[in-house]
Image (cartoon, rainbow, N blue to C red):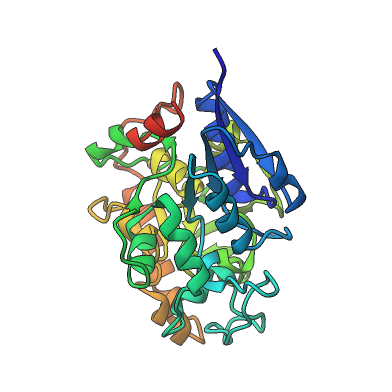
Length: 352
């Protein structure tokens, strides 16, 4: 029996996009996934048979939207799907395939230009007409979170735009709203920063806190930052690192909204206190009823206006107090073994 066939349009295999695609291959071995890396590779797509075409982005390729529109016109049996991993399609420039240069909404924090991740903050951004045409040809345009859906549905209103969470660790057991804080030993709090170390994920905020908070009251604060003093970890090492370094809490301080964040899923699953920015998918995914989940910034406007980090300082100290005050009231230590994954029916029906 021949396998189902899915062509993947994507050159840049990094971060969440890489994990998303690897998970598809892992959980759907009955489907053959073939990577299409450039315009020349488009010729490998069989124009006589049925197949899925999973479009992620055109980063570092010479593929343009018109190529895919023409491909669909040549074979109507091809089923197109687009997964919205970030705000790429709001930035898309069909002439150069690079990012539109925009005003930096966070110039008070850095001089770099506004990245693809923050373009949604700019008013009156519209989809390029060719993008709308491509979206119309898709069976579905997939948003992993309500945040993404809200942004794109304001610019594209067809019903094929849907919300489908990524394949990820199941958080069903976490609905009991428990929390856990490792014992504080030798008056030392260990803070884990396990997101990718980069600008839009708030590394500037973390560096500011690290440089100003190595001591607090009678406590010593150790910062464990991925890519700096601890190595990048494999997928199955996240919880091992938490145990190894006796991590008491985790930070998620992205300065623009994230569309999903696999690291956040693990952070929630750890049941450790989270110090996070209430923006993007974080605002909908982090349970605010859990008392040890603590908001750093309520929205992007607070981040933009807090040029002297006064809000950040106040709330970080409140967070530290919360950790120390709750350390003596321990819940049952969570079990990080035998993690279950949640796969939406959409992916089961499309690739299963």
